[in-house]
Amino acid sequence: MLGAAEIRELALGLELKPTKKLGQNFVIDPNTIHRIVSAAHLNSKDLVVEIGPGLGSLTLGILAKVPKVIVVEIDPRLAELLPVTIKKHSPNGQLLVVLADAMKVTELPGEPTALVANLPYNISVPVLLTFMQRFPSLEKGLVMVQAEVAHRLAASPGSKEYGSPSLKMAWYGPARLAGNISRSVFWPIPGVDSALVYFETNANRDQSIRAEVFSAIDQAFLQRRKTLRQALGNWAGSVAEAQEILLRAGVDPSARGEQLGIESFIRIAQAK
Image (cartoon, rainbow, N blue to C red):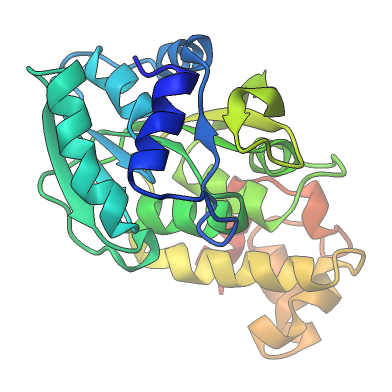
């Protein structure tokens, strides 16, 4: 496990100054790494994909639980150093490095069953949802994100945090908060606290209607205080047609999107 001094030393050797643009905030506390890995509920059969491994502290924690990790890293300096760090601290660990922007990755060297990542704050939700869509082999995941984002991802219908990210996450499977992370465990220290979100995927979703479900969700939350009858007018073709679709789906046309769970939106998409 890497300590704070070694992480700073590795960064110094690369002449690396962590950048906000790439969301580079490295975890320097070994106890936090243990918490993250424990909360991920990994087993020895899992093939883990990690997004943004940075200097490798979380990667090493994951390799203590599983034999192989795929990492996706956008910074070529970090991607080049990571195998050296892993070989030194976890000589039996297998590491597969993908040098790429996570938003542009369409293939991985293997079919991952678990996603574990300290996601960049600025693109955490798009990256998470993109990976869930592109890699259906994923069965579970544990992500560390900005605390505010974590509460949105795990929110329930009717809560103030509930919105499009909550529903889109729920499409892939139930998500729950798995702990808070203080900003003090990072280097450099970010301006916000973080939180962990754990999820398991639902393998029974009909992927052929995902785009229609997501489109309905987006329309429902463009003006979240509108009734669904009004909010889905453009999506359905007219307010009258939206009402008919909602009635066929067994949904009250005067309800608002923030009141509905993912199963209701699935029925709405199916009724179109």
